[in-house]
Image 1 (cartoon, rainbow, N blue to C red):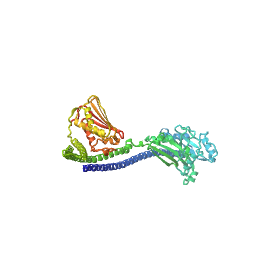
Image 2: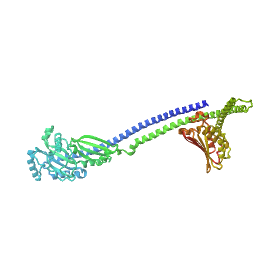
Image 3: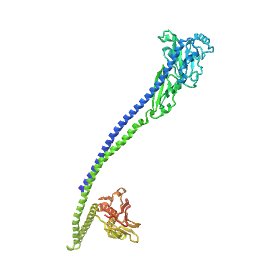
Image 4: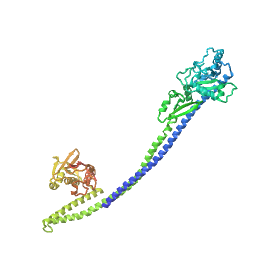
Length: 594
């Protein structure tokens, strides 16, 4: 038996070790799958980011191309205007307007406020310039703002567009530092030059930021190799005045996505007033989660600017944006599935193997138990017979000492027979060979008979036995032999595990078709952690009296099995140090057939 138990223990340890190993294998499969998933997710995320960058750059280039195309048209207007001025010495405002009329600027370029010419004159040339303007039919022409300056660059002609009120004629832009800086750079370089952020004199769009693109005009045939030579030959500037908001709105609306906005700053202006333009969607795009924001410094026609582009992730499709997250959670679920599958396949095979081995061991154990019980029962019975004959005087008169020794031997043999009988019952029960023979029995009478058989043991321990029985008979269809075994085991345990002077109570009652039997004591009780194991085979609960009580650890196991064969249940309620109560419930009719 010890060898069999050792085998079961070894099998259990083997199962634990292999279970740990299977868990490690499953976790390894999960880890490998997770690593592959993360690698794939990272590559997919990078690919989506690359697509986002490509879409962003594509839109940024489109904005740049659209803006550049319009600025090139402005430059073309300026060169044509400059050519017209140089070939017509006595050009009038009406001729100037007539020249620009075919361009349909008001309809096609709503951002242009005006196209004109500013004449470059020194302080000494002002009187002659005003006299000439009067001779050309414009006697009311005046230079403003007033002031004594060495150089004046007043507006001579200005083709009025998009609501321009014509107030700019005579305006000396050279008096404004921003305009003057652009004119000086244009004059020295000979190239078109853009001013910084300004407010136009015409005020056709109040509180709107604008800029002026200047093209220098020089005397025909004069040397233009150095800045000094170009300054000496300077006649004036052809210019185009442009409203920033109308220009950039037009650029953004030319086939551009609503998912990109921009903000423009004049890099040379006062930081508090440097913001030149901000699209209506810029703030919302900038504050969106995962939006792409890029700021660049650039120079346009000689003037520095700072532009900030904000783009929403909606530049690319929702399906593409969701690919990394979908790949991640799908990959994790797949890893979990395959790890669980591997664990299940491995452990299922091991479980079947262990179950087979346990069944083989249990069969061998039951066979050995049955064989050993039968082999032990015969000699124990013979010993009982011979000891009984000696006590009855068949071998002559015995001394008191001899009688005492034989009585001890007889009691020990009885305990051994009781254990052997219990083992035989266990063997029969496990083999399914216990057959109930139900009879109609008075449970009250049966309980009193069992109690009477234990009177001597109860009296020896000075215990108090009380009954709580109904006056009428409680009939049940049971196997009296096996039900007696149940009651004897419960009462015997109550006597054994109740200290001297303790109390034992027997109670039986019938409610409808169910009979309830309670066996209570004031004994040592059972720890709550151990109450679930009291009905297990070969289990004995350790307590302060267990060392003084002989037992095989199968009594309560047999009790539970017999009760369940009768179609009933048994439970224990116990508090350490305060006693235990075993409650048996069986149907009054119809015990389970086996």
